[in-house]
Length: 464
Image (tube, helix red, strand yellow):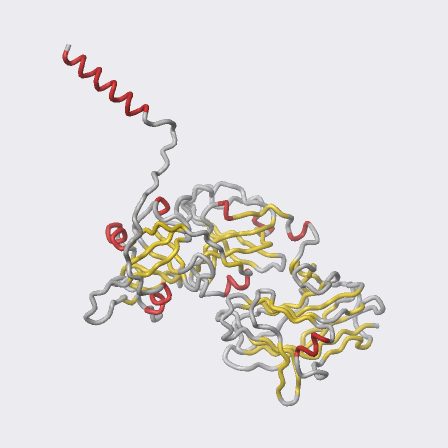
């Protein structure tokens, strides 16, 4: 009888315990902590600067110093969907970061405490600064490589703030992201991009195995960057969206080739028309004329000798604007009594440069067989970041007009350590373009990774 009573009591207790669970939602409980009392005395950039370009370098607090070194940072990665594994990607600010780094660790399920936007403090002295496949990484020493920090040590070094910030991804172009080292391990965003035609019908990852897969992301100029998806991600079987739109991702690299990692499919918002489905905006897909051209005389001819200041050309109908908001714009340069338009992003300190030099209106209705030519001098070349575009509906604001790239224009390259020579571009067939148009020289750079200096001269259009 006593045994029956005990069993009845256990059954009743079981009912009480079960009744406390109101539904089947077993979400991870909110963790309430006090704000850590940490003296921040180091930065992510300090960590990166310790590395000298060879094997990992020990981060030391200084001779005879017992003061620990702490950085503060904001988490931008998430391993919840499985596309990140045993790494925590952090940047030094929730908006307009100046540096980011990957913390290599044996710890998993990091998203349960350190979700995107979570502010953290991390002790770095005694660890090693290095790279993994060219990606700036913080960890232990594993021979001449950066190793993973053990779980217990990782947990003893990281402190979780109560602050969860709204991350504002840095908006960049594909050309900027492809060439930038300063933006590695930070959250970036692209507008008016899509998966390449050959990717349509594919899934994010490899359905049949766990190998990672590269998918090509392109813009309407056919600039391309890789988006990499782990074979362990829980969204690898989902079909790629076939539209055009915005993409948010963590910028990474592998042996010098920059690539993107998304946290989950919500980072991909491709719900607009593809580049070839409408008139679009911005600088659209490449444009090339196949109608007969050649001969004739010059009806538009600019050698920049009329004025010595760019402001005078603006007064005469040219447009000179950096839509990224920085101070890098086109200027009038001179060497050996020859004027030209010039631009360089070197030492500008600007992460994004989008400088337009737009001609006055050019009437294409009174001639046939038109061709464009000009001279370019490329110097201190660290990548081709100049393009030539045209618009038939420009009214003064480059951001509201539709632009198309003249794909037959081949911008010459120059030396990476000095001045090049002027080289002729063209003649480029533009005979199929009618009406009043504007032609623009578009410089898209980023200091210090994309700062090639250009001089442009002798812009000429001929027609019959």
